[in-house]
Image 1 (cartoon, one colour):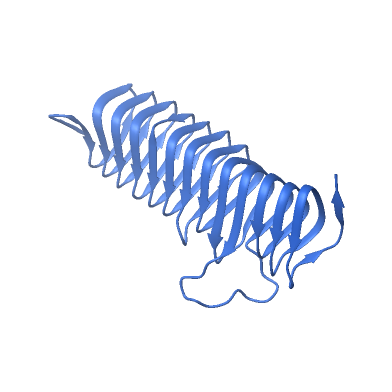
Image 2 (image 1 turned 45 degrees about the vertical axis):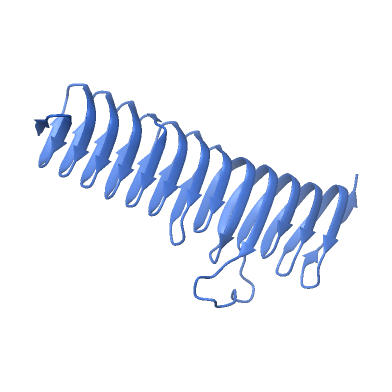
Length: 239
């Protein structure tokens, strides 16, 4: 470990027992931080494990990172693999690799790029949530604006949102395989929805357009509903 003029650089294998307070923290080797870390910018091109609380303005993970406690930041960019066991609070989260979470996840904007994966087992709250890859969550997703535009299936147990758009989008231009879905969910509650290739057990909404490839077992709507050819709805009720 060495100190440069504006931060700390870890180039080899280190166990850091003392708290770290700096402008820039760069992990190029392998590091375990056993006390709290506060920095403006954290860049991980090697491997890092944070045993306790981490606070920073921007966190970039290019290889591997584990946060065993909470992470408070304004920006997270994951291009490698990251696991968070405590709470995550951030303004923006961009995933171009793999991110796993076990506790409360809160962000103003979450973007999951094509070919990328976010997997969780807790409440995920994102004002804007854009899924171009895969989002699997056994907890609830809460969002003002949810967009799923992908060619791979996401599995989300429960969704509560204002506006929900799900549309098949393949970079290769190939059609979706027969019997495949973009989303598999037990329960969706939203104001408006425009959906295709979704398998949903129960959908509650004000209004919705249900397009080709959808299988929805029950829809309870308050205003209007449009069901296109190629969609399957087993039970339909208006409140």
